[in-house]
Picture 1 (cartoon, helix red, strand yellow):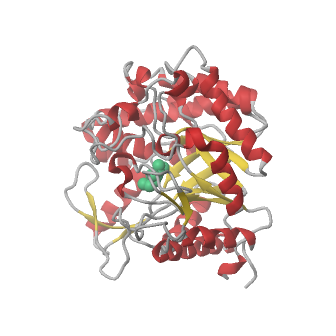
Picture 2 (cartoon, rainbow, N blue to C red; picture 1 turned 45 degrees about the horizontal axis):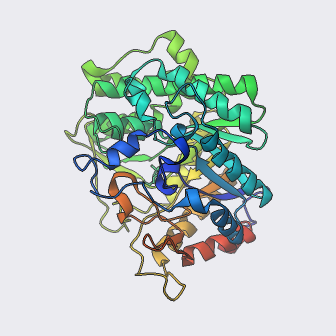
Length: 447
Ligand code: BGC
């Protein structure tokens, strides 16, 4: 079989601002909800771990880009910390904060690496949280105004933009279950936050069309749901789980509708969207960004609010975040997006795995065979989706570095580059060497 990856396939790595940058309040930046959350031992599962230093990327940016070049990356997906650019979330622009991203983009371009810029990877300015955050309908305007600042300054140098990273995680983790910032546990808030996030996405895309000339899209985390049995209960639970996680944001963004299952799932907490809200959310986008980590074999149960649970697979390998390794799910979900959402251009905007690494680096080597096997299996799965007609333009591995895994702190290592958090020494893991070869051969070395 010939190599499925087209010549211009974009191989890259992804990161997010709060997870790697450190110095979250430097140079006039405003605090984010993650600054508050990580410093609150009642909220943070990995108590004491914060983004204060992280990978110190804010101070080591130029060296880190040099390292990306050594790996051979063609693209780098990063996110902007909103509060560095607009310390209050709205109003006065902080040139020093904006300047950091301008330098990052210029350094990437000077090294032949294409930047993919995400506007929102979960670090809402705390000043906006004080006004209700995503529960406030004005958040759509706040977000579009913030987008405008970046589009005006960087469009052209940046040609691929992402509005939101994983709105599902923002609402499920941030407003429903409280495991992520801002740490609320309120079923009545989640559908309101979802609606405002998608209004904000639409408002930012509209703002982009007035200013920008390139591509903008939405990133969703997709986890294909397979019924545990043929029973009507398990089938219905699977449909609910898929609507909740996989369709909740793509349906309004692309079809201008809400999955009917959501009203059943949320009951009294469900909020209807006006025709205006739906129209705002449904803006033409240039690509769908898919983050894929695992699948879910689904059975009916009484878990709140979806009434669907996971069946553990006795034969499978699980990562240290408890996720089943299942490459076939990536092929399946890419083909599902193609079929259900009008054959859009797709970037895999995240894919990767946390595993325990051996105590590292003194010998300059980190052996991580499980991560390397995961990458082989999943990149091959992307190739299969391309062979079956999906329009996949690129693959951004999660993650370049070991980093702050949100409320789980530094306990979960996703990087292909090992980071010693005491010395900040970076060491290529074996998976990084594999990925370099994948890039150098345009995927052919896996075939
Ligand atoms: C997020 C990343 C996170 C990764 C692994 C995705 O949900 O976008 O920020 O580190 O998954 O959990």
